[in-house]
Length: 258
Length: 274
Image 1 (spheres, rainbow over the protein chains, first blue to last red):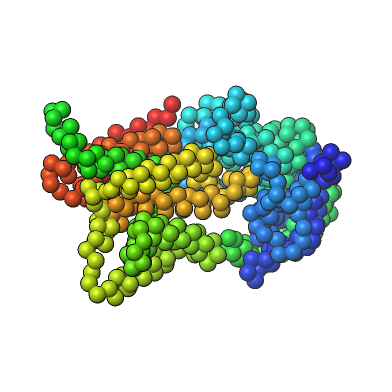
Image 2: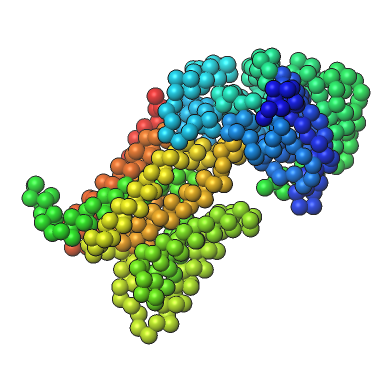
């Protein structure tokens, strides 16, 4: 943890290899993410983008390689360090919870048993709700939200957590323009405040608005650098055609995801 | 009227029974909220039936039934968690494998006894009127332990019930929370066996929470409503069984079942969330 003060990378991944049974999801991935940097990850379906985020979140065990988050293994981080927003929230939408209840869960990792939900906790929930424009919907049951509103609620929960690292898995896929703009504003504000953000996306048009750096991943890192340069290099266009031939990769990866 | 209400209390065994019913009803329906929300309804049946093996072994060895049942129930609960995680099978499959196996072991052992032991039947259907003073103390002690653990684990249990993956990524030990819940469930079921028996304990774990779920869309209210319904039905069922000269466990379960259908059919769901 002392590395943080000396400016060590927020995330340092080296030689990360992940295998689901016989399927190779990631093969020797290495990169670093600094504080105050938003790194975009692009790649075709089944390229291992989601697996990469899950590995950093400590949800998937690497077969080989090393992941350091602020100089520690993901498992040994203090509760509340990482906030992760998955691509598809596989929650039970009939769960008895309002939007406020869900966002308040973001505070739970930081709360000791029996600790009161403090004024600071409530303020963090309120400001996360406001930032994602959910203030008017706070009392609504989660099943009564649109897709974009649901996505904003989960990002709000992640922000209310006051994480030191934010992982977003395709947060803009299938959401309305208003939601996308709200997300972009929030993410850029957090990054300006020093938060490191790692985000997968399919949306290349606004990559330079979102990210400080872009990384093309197809099981291996194919290119990395400033968004404009990476897009101009054609590294992503190349694998897009490749995916049309091997379009079955995605279903394989999901079938083996634990 | 007050005579009618107080009449059963002239007997000391009825006082003990009411105390046990109140505690068991409240405890089962509180932890039952997590059982219903985590879709573990099958587990009450599973652990309760599995504990039968422990009861038979305890009988053969001449040790306390509770001890035998508790040991096997906790082992089964942990085994269910382990098979679920390591065997890559779903939780209900893990429950199905372990509970039938352990129950079969109990039946196997009992079938080899020279004569069927009559008092083992009590554990199948429960007899709260026969609860001894020391058993009441055991019920109170175990219930206190489970209640304290549930309070301490309130937030991790709620978060992992709703969204275990994101909860784990945020640093909550989802695996530990799941094992802890399974062990607490095992203890709750053991505490409840004498009141309602192996066959009916699942109803007290599932039905009050399912009833509360019909009436509210907020978690804290569901928890409170479920506890209130469970306590009221356990005490009310015991009263009814006293006056109807019916089996206490069955009467309690019939009452919670009635409460569920009343709540479901009334359709006056308190959908508004303030």
